Length: 112
Ligand code: SF4
Ligand code: F3S
Image (cartoon, rainbow, N blue to C red; front, side, top):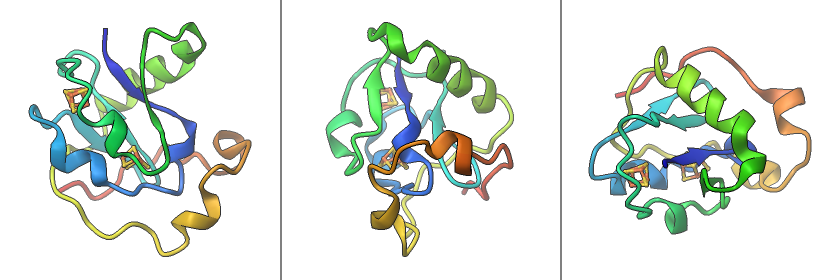
């Protein structure tokens, strides 16, 4: 089992999650984060910290596509362990439907 970052992180990227992870297993894309499923120890600490409710346990079968995306991009995006400011327009995108199709970027973020 692992936790996964899901669609609502896209263009919200609040980054509150990275500071609480005891094993630093978040990786940064251009406009979202992912969790490395082999590094996550399933502690659950990050889930309530996300203002966008974009972190879920992988026990939900509907999340298979997101588990794969987290696993794939955790291999190439840089690690991030410290919080920066969220994007200034993060709130405008919180809860917006269809974010993956419209806004997902495979480009890596800066990491830290
Ligand atoms: Fe890190 Fe725990 Fe969240 Fe996994 S569940 S990403 S180990 S804080
Ligand atoms: Fe994304 Fe939530 Fe972290 S929006 S960056 S999973 S705090």
